[in-house]
Image (cartoon, rainbow, N blue to C red):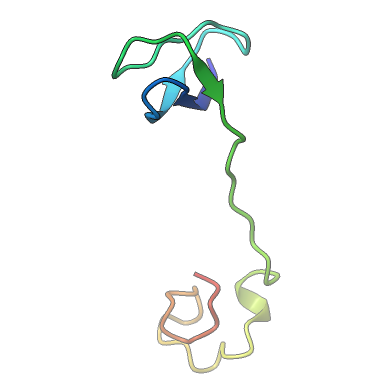
Length: 75
């Protein structure tokens, strides 16, 4: 069963809901309205080519597992 992000058109509540199918009818958990808008999915991505591409890898105290302390921004 997929999980989708929704926003209620009536009360503005945003939530994640587990649904049986992509086109399932859903109700707002706060106000009970059926006026729910499906929001675009959010996802994460590595943009810096991974930990091995960090220019500060020799300075990283974690052996460069990108702990965030080396200043590379690749958390």
